[in-house]
Image 1: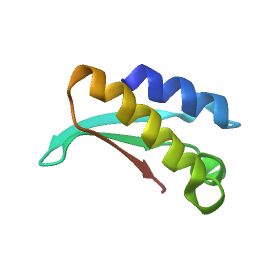
Image 2: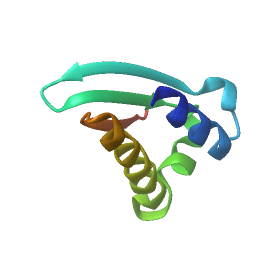
Image 3: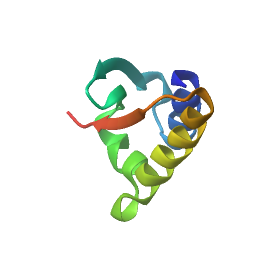
Image 4: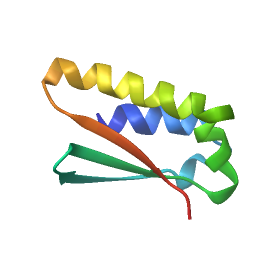
Amino acid sequence: MEQLIRVIARALVDHPEDVQIQVKEDARGLVYELSVHPDDVGKVIGKQGRIAKALRTVVSSAAVKERKRVNVDIISE
């Protein structure tokens, strides 16, 4: 799952070397925290959050196969 998020995020940004993912587990299930270069945050979120929503949809669909609850949080610093 982490590799899927990394591949998609690196394809979207101008600074692919700055893509970082941390995995945490909480009451919601697995949470993948995606952080990118500050200049690339808008590219990962997209207009009105469309790209972020699509990313979350793809990851959630892949997680269904593994019967896991997965969330993707985009960290902007």
